[in-house]
Image (cartoon, rainbow, N blue to C red; front, top):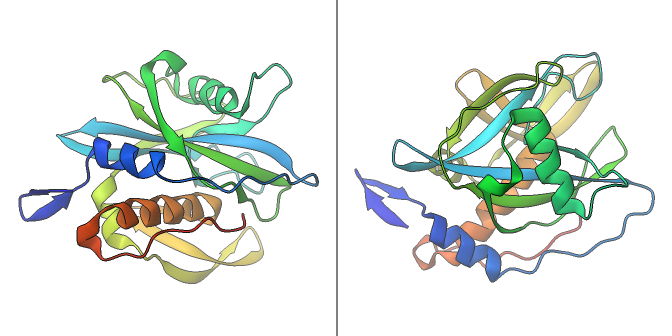
Length: 210
């Protein structure tokens, strides 16, 4: 990490090094639908930011939630990375060629729906104009990565969502709430980054069950 204006700045190289030195848990979950998301990083105002979307409220359990771009594996997809890149283009209008893939994270099970999510961390190589799909995306926004890292370990809170109670990691940023599988993916990313930075004093991150 670099010091900038009294704050630590996490670099792309540190993240790539951390992920290359990490072996994600390999798991076959036959009772779950395979899906994949991109965990998108980009440079904004000279700092790394994470890119998020808020789903359109369509009446489904995950409608209206903050998430990473992604979706279910389809038969024509070459692999799960192809799934994540295809869905990101469909939802945000960013072509696959503009991403550098930095590494993978442990798969995560969703709660309340039958998916297992395979996250791929990627870096956007140049500035682009986002084209949100109005049928799927209500809002595209970014959060400084250092804000997420400084919020970690995240608070665990009870949350009621569409009549159901959840105990979950919660991250507040401005008017947005990041929780559920997205927050668990962030927890794993933060743990891996911190473990790779000797100045953090963090213990090496170990793969956990999704």
